[in-house]
Length: 51
Length: 230
Image (cartoon, rainbow over the protein chains, first blue to last red):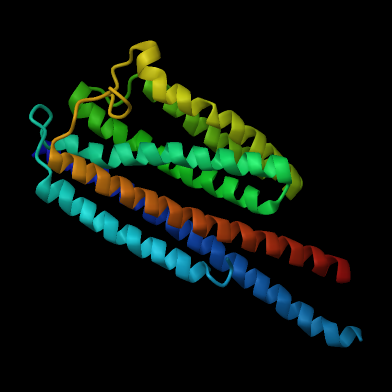
């Protein structure tokens, strides 16, 4: 029974680690995408007034 | 790559999820229990593929590093940084799953055995690349520093692989010509399935990390352009 507890924690740690890393990458991607869109929007808003 | 990204990444992630489900079924429902260690030996089916894919990650890091050093093209740097970071995550999981097997098998969580110690050195080298890149003042400097350190990290992989032979360590030998005991058919299939699933998962994570690197480069360029125009 003790062996199965070890196994459970072992596999849980692996998948939890990978899910955390995926969430970390997803968050960074979403943040970078939002900042890029906001920057492009500001550049477009500025462009007509510059003329 | 930009337009195809959702399709490529989605397909790789779906295939890896299916592979992981099949591998887990094979590991827990089909593969026989090892006679001496019992159920705890089953940690081997995830520990070994993670270790093998860590080696693959360092090889991809080496390809990216050499590609960047010879051509200077950013795509090689994106490949190197993705392989380095994903490789570090996998190496971390190797260093966590190892002790989970070692405690019931050897009676200790950690020992300064040659293969384990050289794997820890690899983990430190990969972490060092991520940290050193963060301290660089320009993207070009980060790419160059990362590439040179990537080549250095790659030199550790053959040392990890041969550590048991060179220093007569106690770590079990699994792979290589004339190395390790043959596995029972159910065990071999479980290991192969797990190896394939973890390799596809690695590919999905590298594609995602490369996409992030490309987006961050575009953001830095846009911020630079905006700074100049305002």
